Length: 301
Image (cartoon, rainbow, N blue to C red; front, top):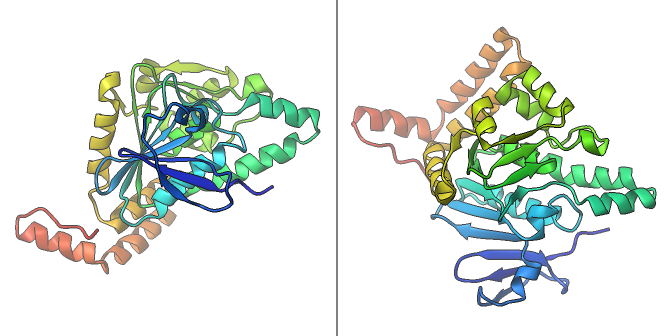
């Protein structure tokens, strides 16, 4: 079944995506205070600067993120930002008590009743897994601003980001074991790289919930801030991490991801190939010139 097209509603602050009853993509202007808007609100995209966007999973996209109704919208908004050459960084956050609460359990129950659960899971992972792979491989910096509960596939989204900032309300939950499922969304690959293998094993097999302090202690969170500072701090990190040349960002992210799958000799060869490629870029030329001229480099947009 094809995904419903998206209707893009623009107000003074954001782009709002929700299922479009018309079979075309349209843009209309609406005041942000219309009372019915919150009933449909799913993904807001707000410009934090010329090169940084804030993507907010709001309403049911925060509480029922991983359903065939809402996950395509989340993936579409992130993919659009990742594909936009003007966008250097994404800040991803949720709304209220939830960053992303994971699956819609009612959809699971219906799929089980209809003997359709494997297809539903296959369809959901078919959207989520290419998305988190693209986030890891892109030169665009992804920052998770974790405002609340983060579970299941939503945890995969947060862990796939390059850096995570949490408020006091941030928490992560394994959630899979209690549902009779095995983990997905890259969580069993991503979490051990942050906290280690045995701690990850305990997290999943004890069906744990970690509060913000425990997330910071284990290294899931890079920064823990007051609730009111969550987006401000996330934007600061987005600006800093995205300030380097495109090759530098993309190659560094790639090398850090593959290092544990290579033996040392193979990894050295891989580093050599990529740094030789970097030597051909205009960013390298600009970096050397700026260093010699004692000025800040001017990276191309």
